[in-house]
Image (cartoon, rainbow, N blue to C red; front, side, top):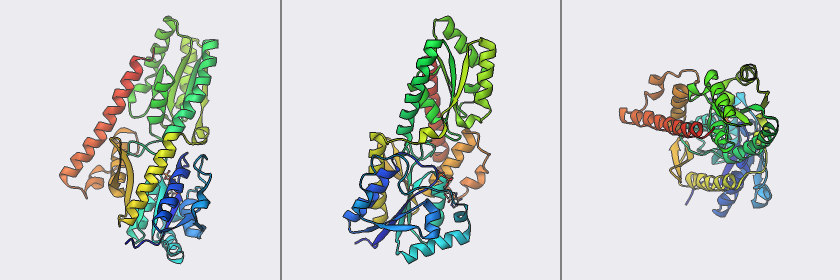
Length: 363
Ligand code: ADP
């Protein structure tokens, strides 16, 4: 018999299509097992302020098809402070919340691990269009965002073709290049610039690719740039391409528009499966864990392991501030460290292999 009578669910950090499907699944799966659910509005801010509502199955009706998050989201620096966490804990005690499902990105998981360590069992679900959580191959929102990107860039491509133009397109993804790389392949981009592959942003090579393709009769040139390249990179590249090639070149930043919209089938299903798994985990007594998707299956990891892995990947390969790797990996055995290094290296190799295919066929 589960000790859980009531659990909370929140969405935090950047919103992502499919978060609603996860909230719905958490609510209905818990209810089906005799556990009450409390919706916590605006993430950790709502937890601190007590902005909560007891949910029944009807409270999550008609949301599976909606973009954004019906629980709303907020950034909350107060939650990073001890007093903020203690206040959040008091809200849990007041509303008899025995455990929490937290849907979001790495920041949200940091909050969840902090709360777990203070006695409130938490399970994380990856929800971010950036797909930048190293421990999972998939995070809710990524598929919808990719579909939005290709829909918009296909339109740019139509007009580029008509006018023999080039369009440099900056795509969200924070420092991660997954969205730019995968959507770039799907729109037939001539070049794709991502941080994980430093040579991908070599301007001379990009221009040479454009000129070679033009000589071969190509009229449209799409250059995908990951947000992580920095806000100056895309506009500067646009100017340089036009100056050197004399091809009319425009810059477009897709930004937050990519975050919205009705979730795709994949995000509705992933949200549902991950939501159901999170409830099962809480009820079986697990805490401080995150739901992941690896090798075609829903799996789980310790949040602390997922966060360390994430820092390792981002610091080694994605140009984040170099973490003190020794300190970061100190709690882990030599064998575990090797597994973590290998995991990150494999992830990068897969990206490189995909990038190489993209460049081979982009002419
Ligand atoms: P995401 O979850 O998408 O990565 P953020 O990084 O903005 O988004 O994190 C979302 C929220 O998680 C923050 O506003 C904060 O309330 C909480 N959070 C982030 N980092 C920490 C931390 N180190 N300790 C506690 N809570 C954190």
